[in-house]
Image (spheres, rainbow, N blue to C red):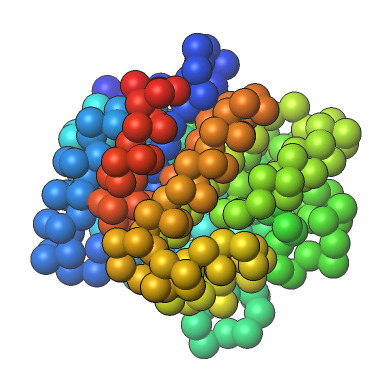
Length: 297
């Protein structure tokens, strides 16, 4: 049975959507642990799930395996990620066709980060250079697949400015993107500024807020190095006062995320997308659970 398109869920929603993001485990032991995490998260009743993607076959098979398993467990649409990295156009069509044959009707279309041995993105020979091209390819070959794309409230690290980054987002929208999910952010003002700029430019597609509940200062410092997202001094101070890691630090990080969610919901966000990092504590803290149940349960 084919998944419902997420664009339809957004159009018909009676309340903001809830979604989780997982990444494919590296081995069978980690896969079993992730299944336990996912089974515990089922009680929060997400509207859809996303699964990240490794280029060049690094996690490609596990992405499909995990997506199939999560859809079986949750009985909700699962959206695999797909990037331009390491694939020709022909290979990308084959991959999308594989997802399509298994009933997936939503794909998160991304350019992707450069491989670890490259300092900048270089298109694969016979491949694509931009996420907008990937959206166009998917829509041309499989018109009934819905496409999500990424938005960057603080702009993509490679963009010259937020305005030029929104130009790139407009290209993805013009090619047929159905909705936008943001990169993680910790200051809601950044999201609102980004959303207002998008609306002023004519982006009418729903913009979902991507959030990462922080559970330790060392954890978030590693993530900040990769994402180049700013980290509020106030949150860093709260984590330090709570001991940087451990139960008190987890409470401080979760409290910050809950305050973000409550404010975003009060300001009309159409959905909250939680970057789970395959850890149950990220979404199963009692305060965050209570927050989710109040607006989504």
